[in-house]
Length: 264
Image (cartoon, rainbow, N blue to C red; front, side, top):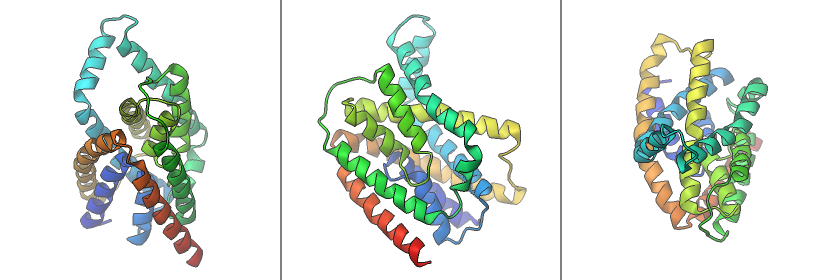
């Protein structure tokens, strides 16, 4: 992978991690277009690195909220910060279980599965369309809601299903306030990504050739900077109920991907 390709993939990851159009799906489609020949494990490893970059951009955007959360936890009381943290932990369980039990199966879905990506993009389009028509409320995320949102996040580990789209759509369909839904969606994935990075580093699964480090670093920076812009943009769009535009986009890209896969 050369530097230009790494920048393209990084920008796409940064934008699509927060926009509800499936970052992993777009990365797979882009790599197919660019003629990437990575085996599934290497393809997934590069995807994980780019996700790590967008996780850092999430922390930057929500730095004040994260600081307040940490401050509240150190009060050692049954306060809103502790409740929110427990909800985040609850939301992680489905994805952790799926990731640990089906890691090899998940890896097999990465690396040129264009037909799968196309079909999952159509599913994402349907979810976004339903969520866009849902009534807005002031409801907060409950503990039971956190589990259901976590299940949608686990399903979104498939390339082509937007993680932010699935979790925000699930939240909105459950009647949760759109701003709270976006905040919870973006923050709930951060511990998972950091945990995945830590696990892969300790196990030796996340290793790259020295010749790849420049491309990886450039892709990482591109994803981080693009993520900063996309995160702010997405929060504003969710508030204004503009998910139907992304639904149409996913439907178009998904249909093109399916057509491409069937003709090749």
